[in-house]
Length: 231
Image (cartoon, rainbow, N blue to C red; front, side, top):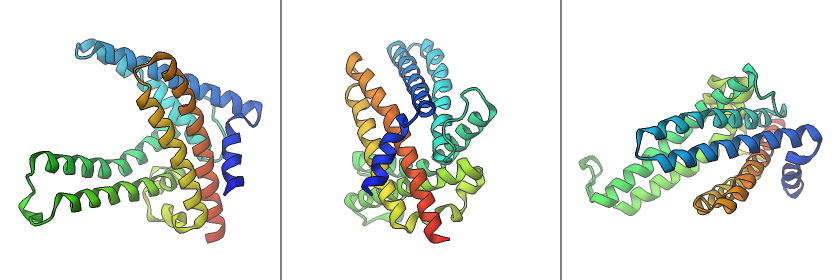
């Protein structure tokens, strides 16, 4: 696991091509962050919609670049149909796997705030509902990376098939997922806690871009190893 994790951490800067790709990812993240900050400053005026919509462009560029790493093919060209296709596949599979946990969390939050438990599940405590919601979040987040790899490599439909999850029971995938989850959670936490501070937010966004590239490389390697042992 140590070797796998160290190799993933080195991936973004291992050679000139990867360093350039990581730098482009960083530019995309910084541009998206700047546009979203402008949108936040304009809210609730309708003018916020312009920078918010413009932020979609660098976000999709970032997804396309990270998707290339997930596919095991390295960073694709920024302005190419392949990058747009990969971004669409990654976004599509992410929506499918993130909607159920989002709905579960919102539902539990509503029940906790209002105390209104539907009659069909009467007698179930809020703590039990929260536990179920947590399980949904963990399961979906565990399966998402494997499905994302299948989607960017073979198409969105492939990412939504049961076969895409075949390697998730392996130790290689589990260890890769743990390492990638740590990187992603830390980077998102840094962004969330520094959002109101300009200099710190800039550093956090740099960490965010680097961590996601490394996490993508780690997941791709974990899936490849899992598929090797399961084949």
